[in-house]
Length: 358
Ligand SMILES: NC(=O)c1ccc[n+]([C@@H]2O[C@H](COP(=O)([O-])OP(=O)(O)OC[C@H]3O[C@@H](n4cnc5c(N)ncnc54)[C@H](OP(=O)(O)O)[C@@H]3O)[C@@H](O)[C@H]2O)c1
Image 1 (cartoon, rainbow, N blue to C red):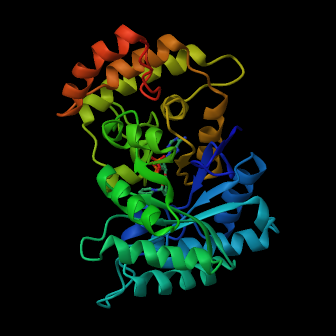
Image 2: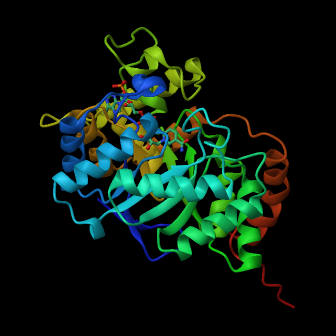
């Protein structure tokens, strides 16, 4: 397991982060997974035993149950709090009340307290806004986040599911006021969903932030059990819940290419799964700090963790890049077109500043 800096901070996080959306299973969250305490303990122990030090949850996962199960697990397993980087989130609706949702100061102050109680800890390492709140001024949100950092309840802040301009505006407000800035952004990123390469990846590289990809297997669609001619039996999540959206025909072409690569890496001793190829592709991408995996059992978890041992060749990565590419939207195709002659003629990389020689 490798450990990467969390954005431009001194914190090292494992390149695989344990996602906990499969814990609990209340209401809307049932299709994601219904793991109860014993199963959660097995998952958390297996993750930590295999080098994972980074765990992601959210207040809204099973309406607090995921945080509660995780907190209990850390306690029961006797894990060292200081060895874990615990991330959670705020923004989603927690109950029917008018103000039980969003990123107003009121909600941030209430939700951090509730999360800390459920997790049975006194601070969260990375507190993330789970999306944009169109009716709360960003100034209010950033000031609320600053206050919970200053109070010691939160160490770092991050964002999720924001447009690049929203991240830049929020961090601009924070910088102007001397407040804490987002160090990471959590986004959907898989070999069948590369939209964030257009705006988020260049922003993150420019701003030295970290990307924490979620649903790297597109909710299981890219695990190898969904093929053009076959769907899994049983309670596999994507049979019940079509999220995140996937262009299935395009994804089947990618899955077939990944099957060939998985076979090429399989030996007598062990098979390499399609899931591992899909995860190894995400792990290879620029700007990616830690890939948030989901698992319903320890077999899936170990399979996914083993992706860190799979090194795809340059040719394999190029092949996967090509088959999974989609046309660039505007203005990205124009930016690329205009950049081409500046970069290739002078042999500059995008982050180098141009030195004009006289
Ligand atoms: N910020 C956000 O808005 C956001 C959104 C979504 C997720 N997340 C975070 O990202 C984490 C991961 O998301 P995700 O659960 O959607 O990830 P994912 O890796 O795309 O999907 C996980 C699902 O795929 C199947 N699977 C996983 N590994 C497998 C394997 N090796 N072989 C076969 N099937 C396998 C399992 O479902 P089945 O067995 O049912 O097929 C599992 O629950 C979440 O836990 C959460 O922490 C964040």
